[in-house]
Image (tube, rainbow over all chains, first blue to last red; front, top):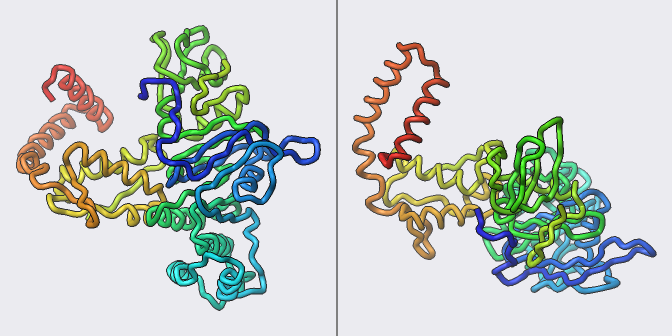
Amino acid sequence: MSPGLEVTGPRRAPALEVTGLGVRYRRTWALRDCSLSVPKGSVAALVGPNGAGKTTLMHAAVGLLRPALGGVRVAGEAAFVAQDKPLYESFTVAEMLVFGRRTNTRWDGAAAADRLAGLGIPPGRKVGALSGGQRAQVAVTLALACRPDLLVLDEPLANLDPLARHDVMRSIMAEVAERELTVLLSSHVVSDLEETCDWLVVLNGGRLQVSGDIEELLDGHLVLTGPDGASAAGTRVVGASRTGRQVTMLVRGAPPLDPRWQARRPGLEELVMGYLRSPESAALPGLAGVGA
Amino acid sequence: MIEFTLDRGSGVSTYLQLVHQVKQALRLGTLRPGDQLPTARQVVESLAINPNTVLKAYRELEREGLVEGRPGMGTFVRQGVAGATLAEHTRLRRALEAWVRDARAAGLDQEDLRALFAVVLADAAKEGVA
């Protein structure tokens, strides 16, 4: 259990730094007052309900939109794979590689060809004839061929079967093991991210709720179960739910003294859900404020 | 070489599962001094987990003096690890098997055995025996 309540900031140099970011579409703010930093070499999960601002944050990170307020800094080059994995249906896989070489200044075509061969994707096959998993692999391969320092993936696992999801994550993780690559990927299936991500960013309604190292976040929180009326003094309550006489709470800090509580470490999904259900709570570096 | 597996529903953090599996393999003699552990990339390619998790597990094993990282070569089981306990394994296992037979004859089932073993282990830890 970590001794303090603070979620510590990154100790490694940041790969992505967002300060006071605000993005507005006409009169609605898609993102407000968003400050976070993702350390180099991490695999960061960006989670939140639909309309939370995930895609907006990713677009801002890779320079696809100009923020109304604040700024974004990427250490090095960023590559982006959009959710619909835009590829030309009538191109063959080999033609996509040629297209990539002509449209990018940094391009490692040999590595991309090797990667596709390793995945067993035939270069002569038309993109339109590939399976969903293969299309995802081709899109990720094209992004990696730009030799990015930051790889940003919008819902890379959406619409893929479990086997294809596993294969896509395996090949992204292998790339992270090879060189210092930072990954930011969004998903609304938190269970897909449990073993692959080490950094968590939670957005909710255009605001940043959580940003931090996943192990530290999980070590710093407890799920308490006990009778209604038991005292949780000394902890900071993120959210609570009641069923009859029993209360279940997600809290930050050391276990409470009241012996009627049963305490355990939360899972990633519980932590994320706990925050999403209590939009007024936050766990941010250097920010102790947790609403009760 | 050891091949890691992952119990995704166990609630035990991934890096601890890797640590436990190496320790278990050392106890059972499937990993021996001088053996190499798989590289982070190899583990990641089979399990689709974060490479930092593998490195964290290896750092923990190194901190406990069980393995050593050799720069540019990989991570290896250290000399002189687990040898003494392994020699006693057969004798202790026989004794435990006899105990299990005895307990079964007395009418205890699998769950009873586990509970009894866990209690004795916990008591021994409290008294500083184990």
